[in-house]
Image (tube, rainbow over all chains, first blue to last red; front, side, top):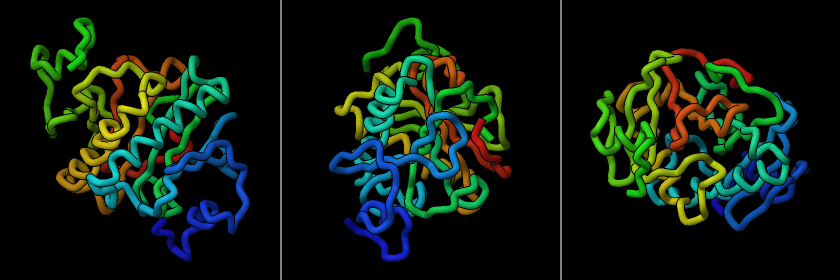
Length: 117
Length: 117
C-alpha cells in the first residue's frame, strides 16, 4: 500500500488513527473533515500514498479517477447530488495543502461562492 | 467522441469555437478561462462529453484521472508547480456549474484562501 509511517492519512487507512469513515472501496477511503467548511465536507483519499498532484504518475490515472466515483456515490448518499457540490484538491503551500497525501475535498449542503478561494 | 451538438466545450474540442489552448492529449484538452479568477486559470476537459460528476461512470476512471496528469503538466509548464495550485470541479447549481461538460479548474499564481467558496 506504499504507506508512509509519518503520514496522518496513511495512519487512517491503516486504522491506527480513528476517523468518521463514510465510504470505502478497494482503492479509496473517505471520512468527514474535522474542520468542516460546509454542512457536508468529506475528504476522499486513495489508500496508496501519493504526496501531491505533482506526484501523480500516468499509472495512477485509474486510481485518481476512482476518487470521483467515490465523490459521486457519497454525494448521492448524503443527498447533495441534485443540488450540487464542489470537489477540490490542493497542491502545496499556495493552495493551503497541509497533509501531504492527496485528498479530494467534497463540499456541499450550501451555495458555494466564486472564486473558490 | 460522444459530442453533444449544443455543448460549448464539445464545440471547442471539435474546433468549431476558438479557445486559447494550452494543452492537448489523446483524452484531454485545456484552455484558459475567459473569466480568470487567478493569474493562472485553466480549464481542463475530457474530449468525451460527460455532463457532471454525477455522470462519471466507473469506466471513465482513467479518463478522469488523465485530467490530473494534464494538471500536473500544465502547472509545471506555467511555473506554479512548486508554489502550489488548486484543482476544482463543480457539480450542478449549488457549486455554480454553468457548462455541463465536466471541467477541472486549475488556479494558481496567487495565494488561494479557505474555504474554497
